[in-house]
Structures are given as C-alpha cells and as structure tokens.
Length: 185
Image (cartoon, rainbow, N blue to C red; front, top):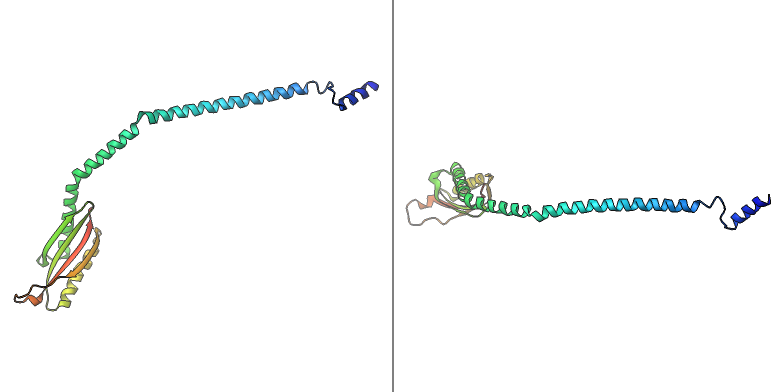
C-alpha cells in the first residue's frame, strides 16, 4: 500500500508517472498533424490564387478588350457621320409631312428648318385671312396646339408678326410665327 500511496503522492507533486508518460508525445503529435493540415490548406489557397492571377494576366495582357473598344468607337463614329445626312433628311421630311397635315399649305408663307446635332430648329410663318385679329389669333393658336401634340416636338412658341401696311385688304391678313424644336428620330 505504501507503494501506491507513494505513486499517488509523487503524481500529486508533479513528477511524471506512468499515466502522464505518453500524454506529452500525443499532444505534440496532434500539434504536428494540425500544423501539417494548416500548411496543406495554405499551399492549396496559394496555388488557387496563383492560377487566378495567371488567368487575369492572360486576359489583360492580350489586350483584346481595348482593341474591341477602339473598333466599336470607330464603327459608331463612322455610322454617325455616314448616317447623319439620311437621319436628318428623314427627320425634316417627317416634320414637313406632319406640319402639312396640321397647317393647310395656303396658310404657310415661309418655312425654315435648321438641323442640329440631335434636333431640328424650325420656324413657320403662317398667314391667316380673318376679319378680326382675335379670330386670327384663335386660328393660329389652334395650329400651335395641334403641333404641341406631335411626339417629336420638344419646344414650341407662337408670336404675332407685324402686318404689311399700305396694301388693300391688309387689315384682314394676319401673320404669325411658330418657332420650336423637334427631335430627330
């Protein structure tokens, strides 16, 4: 009994006994295994990062993206410059066609259309034969209101012009100017 008490007393004092003799190597073995697993995982992530970097360098290094961007910009510039006359003439023809449905041709005295980069500026001089100025103003404002309903017209205004003087029946002729802008579609 003395020997077992001595062993228990020795273990209590911190001296290695039979039970603690293999705990330290198991602990170091577990540390070594965990360390190997961590090193393996680190090398796997580094290999994936290196492959991703090589793929990115291959894409960026070849330069096809910049070349394609340059080709597209040249294409759109050429299309704009080559297509501008036809787009402009189509927009002018459509505007004149729409105006002719709204304002009878005998009332149009002058028509000016100036194409811009993306819109058309226009000015229509309208001649209305009416006894009173109020009746002429109502007729001109009716023309202007119909033109406001055009989807391509963005701005429009109506102004009264000074009448011609000295001619017979001039007091019955009234002139109005309709100015505005229309989009090129």
